Amino acid sequence: MGRYQPVDQEKVLDAAEEIVRTRGIAALTIDGVAKAAGISKGGVQSSFGTKDGLITAMYARWNDEYDTMLGKLAAPDSPPMHRLAGHVEVTHHTDEAEADRAAGMLAALLNTPAGLASMQDWYAARLEGIDVTTPAGRRARLAFLANEGAFLLRSFGFMRMDAAMWDEMFADIRSLLAEAQRSDTSKPAV
Image (tube, rainbow, N blue to C red):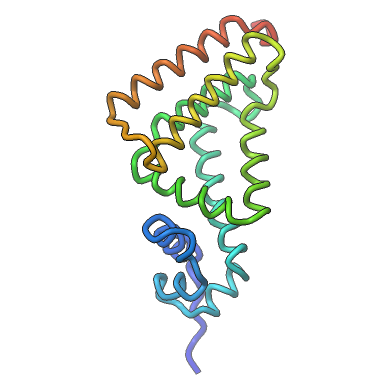
């Protein structure tokens, strides 16, 4: 009997993301991930259980990476507009490989009720604390929606965007958000 080899979960998640990115969510199977990672199906199952467990782990890793990037720009206890500005910066600096990865991740999440619920919660959290009953809050929400629209259009390849166009859009989004921040009466006095 061979010696037990611990499963490198990061390697397995890399393999799963590559499958989703290059071949689509339908190609994501325990067997396919095992072959791509060079381990047994049992190794994948012992680490992640099911395909849904694998998708959940992919999402958790992706979300942790996002939180780390955002944390460099805005502390969790920062004012909501500041956190939203940090989110816009993280999105703007997403490169093509990260955008491809995000598109694959989003496609995977949309395939499961739990994944969809996770994304709905994640999106709601981006606007948490923004008072959308005020003009400033509505401008901030519009900036957020423009940010997400640009990101999704680019990530899924629905709209071709060269670097200049991408930068121009984010200049507009930043301008809209800055206007919202200037007129935000809910911000704490400094």
